[in-house]
Length: 187
Image (tube, rainbow, N blue to C red; front, side, top):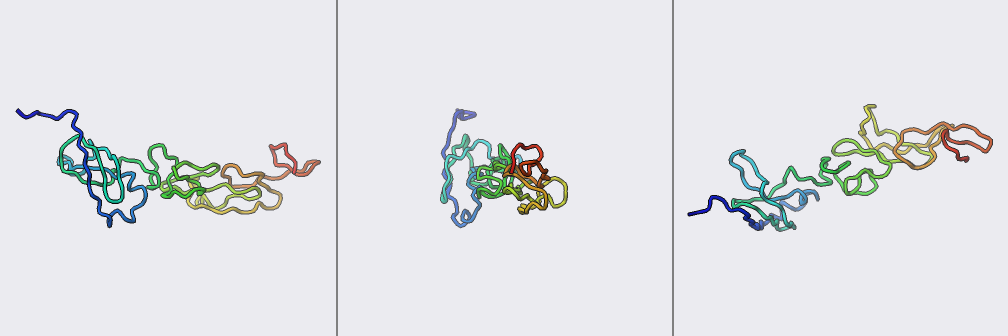
């Protein structure tokens, strides 16, 4: 008598990848690739019951809990930094891994930056004496452009590089020189 189920089945599946189809794919592709089977009930792919063990340019290895016909594809439920979608514990995702652009290589907002949207657009802090202009181009509070650092004008100043800001503060006069309201530091 044949068993009605195979409890504890673990099958290692190694699938060849077509190098021509893998070449030029974004870096996140390998993070989201997994083995799948055809699911007749839904008429689509099922990534259930398989876990990717390894991947390289020519092969993907998965460990599966069932016997079936297998293929490889991008699992839409898997999160990957640099895919342009904010998911999991990502704070931002600008589709890249370039450091110091506001969104780090591990999809965290970098110190002082402000990022919105998916894919994320980030505004960075400016050095002392400059402020960031042109990030929120339509006034809705969402970042649409990276903006640029602009010199503080006239009797305004921004003391130090800190968090993202869009304006310089007014200077006030004191016996030892000028100071920014709220600071006890003379210039």
